[in-house]
Length: 149
Ligand SMILES: *[C@@H]1O[C@H](CO)[C@@H](O)[C@H](O)[C@H]1NC(C)=O
Ligand SMILES: *[C@@H]1O[C@H](CO)[C@@H](O)[C@H](O)[C@H]1NC(C)=O
Ligand SMILES: *[C@@H]1O[C@H](CO)[C@@H](O)[C@H](O)[C@H]1NC(C)=O
Ligand SMILES: *[C@@H]1O[C@H](CO)[C@@H](O)[C@H](O)[C@H]1NC(C)=O
Image (cartoon, rainbow, N blue to C red; front, top):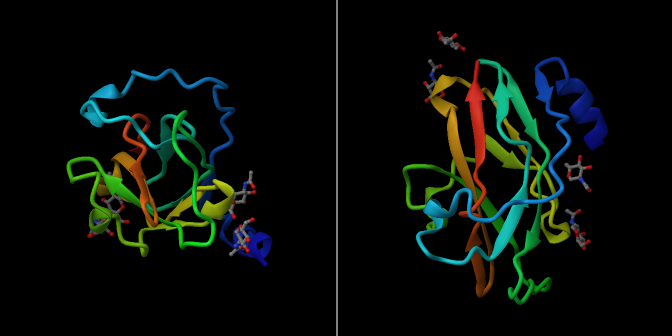
């Protein structure tokens, strides 16, 4: 079902198959954390280029940061991408799901996302926020950077 959907979209989906660097270097984007310790760390291709007018399928996964207590899988896990320039700790600032849908199963730490109808105004940095009952966090240390060509 999902495979069929992706195949149907493949004409205008630019799938990025960049091998991800195995190690994330903490501190590179430390400024966006403002001294906070991120609850989790995401892995996405960096940076990610999209064509104006296309869709962009971004593979994404996350791991809990050392010291985080894990998720309560009996409670709902919600996620949203928040664009740079907004309060990245407020879920209500998430980009509309019409523009970006999290297609991965967050319970499986899969935050793969489909950005639709990309245009130049969508270029920029996006931070993933995840909320699971009392466990709430923003991947402040590693934004997804989208460039539009
Ligand atoms: C991007 O596409 C939109 C329509 O989809 C068009 O109006 C705009 O001029 C294009 N921008 C560039 C930089 O090509
Ligand atoms: C993550 O979810 C996407 C979208 O459903 C899927 O295509 C991909 O195979 C999943 N990745 C993993 C590692 O399970
Ligand atoms: C997501 O993953 C969890 C844990 O593996 C599973 O219980 C749940 O059914 C999955 N949800 C969907 C929509 O596939
Ligand atoms: C770019 O996308 C945004 C969000 O969908 C939309 O509001 C805007 O009108 C689009 N701009 C162009 C030139 O298509």
